[in-house]
Image (cartoon, rainbow, N blue to C red; front, side, top):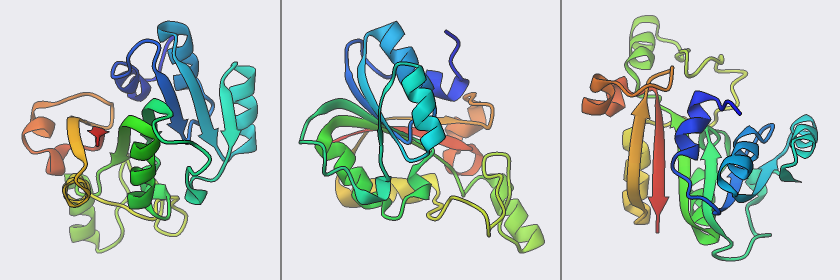
Length: 198
């Protein structure tokens, strides 16, 4: 089974036979792969009825739920890993959701687009308008992103919340790691993958 490049990075971070919760799981592609390739016991959460149907067709356990309502229906330490792929910036209270992720999971993986990327900075400076970039393709009025941040913003939140950053991977819009992205991540990194622990 071929896996999208962005999801392959996450799959490589998950141990065999882990208990995994995928927040904003979409069509369930990641969980379907993890179930077949790593024997993962997983659940997905998504709000879109069409995605729910595709998850069920793929044999993925899925719950229809709005992430803004929290994760109170899950007990502490229920999962080994909680995953949220490019969804953090679209929820109302990202800091509260991070707390919940690390309450129900021993670790979590969070990915999000970097508003501090050089292309966003250049667009804002030269045009004086909200940036559009390959990793942020929406207009200001139709974007699902309500809490855009930079990698530096996210790391400051982790320090404030005393959340341990176990690993960070920074990639470009093709999900490739580059020298400049690693040397100056907040300027040249388009998307970050953070693996967090308590």
